[in-house]
Amino acid sequence: MCGRYSLTSPGELVAEVFGLGDFPELEPRYNIAPTQEAAVVRVLSERDARHLDRPGDAGRRTLGLLRWGLIPSWADDPGIGNRIINSRAESAADKPAFRQSFERRRCLVATDGFYEWKPEDGGKQPYRIHRADGRPFALAGLWDRWWQAPRQPVDSFTILTVDAAPGFAHIHDRMPAVLAPEAFDAWLDPNGHDRAALLALLRPHEEALEAYPVSKAVNDPANDLPECTERLLEHPRYGLFTEV
Figure 1 (cartoon, rainbow, N blue to C red):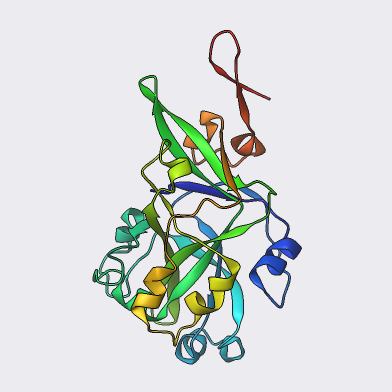
Figure 2 (tube, rainbow, N blue to C red; figure 1 turned 180 degrees about the vertical axis):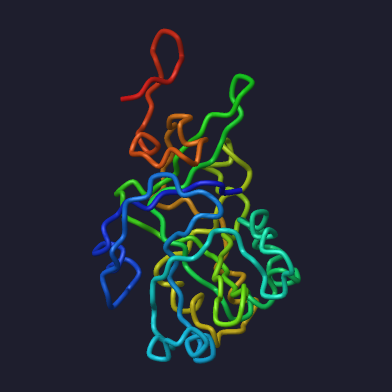
């Protein structure tokens, strides 16, 4: 499960990590929540680029702001997207809500940290999982287009999850599928249909990642503040977490 994440890195660094030709202008986001728009990297097929009136974008990596919470193209009610913020990687290729997207609409969700909640003392303590060097990285995602009205498409996405890597299983039993840079081309290729090869890219990942506790301010999606990403330390006497 992934219910919150951040992207505070400057556009120049995001462009470098994701191999973008343009530097996107991105406002720092400390607490991205479902139903909000967030940065997603795609390679559009010729058909999708044409439908978006962007034929020049076909076949190249582009970054766009998509709604978090996938609305399948066949949906009658866009509210279904509020419940489809995550999809289990093990079954995404076969479920009706994701099957077509897995086939030809895969994407990279840009982040520099995601949050998971660990049951502690009768409550849940949020932890932030990020790269030790602070650089942005990619979560495996799927996207789809739902037509609200003629010529008014809504593009949305979901984050794929896998079993948690051993180093993070004590926090939560699931985690987003993190993709290494060498997997970007295969995952983004709208003409790549080797299901077994694609599924093999979705595995537990903990290389270069670390976790630390953060303030429960992240629980409220209205709190899109730097405090959400700040590390908490354990109080030596009371065992309580206090902000650095």
